[in-house]
Length: 130
Image 1 (cartoon, rainbow, N blue to C red):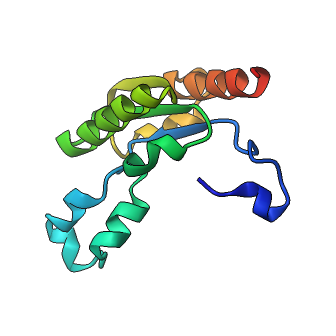
Image 2: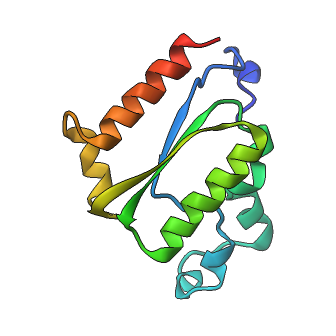
Image 3: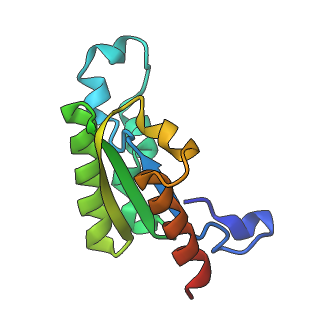
């Protein structure tokens, strides 16, 4: 959501993004025990929650999550994907089977993994289109 031209670079500098098992709306953090150590004011929660700003995202996004993520991480990914779909920014929603939240990122280091293939395809599609 950065205004790149103010830094002397093209506004479409970022061509695509892959979000993997993330927290896209920080409001639930305030409702959990994490609020004791993640000190966020209500205005910071809104400002730092990507799901609240999908209309400003300038590029297509791939959203991936692990089959064995917690219910909350799965919900975040699916809700964010629906919000992106409404604005035309969802490239794909990928549920990676048979792994958990901590294993999913390791798939980026494994050739031919479903996650790596999806990310590479996303990069290829976003850098060769338009």
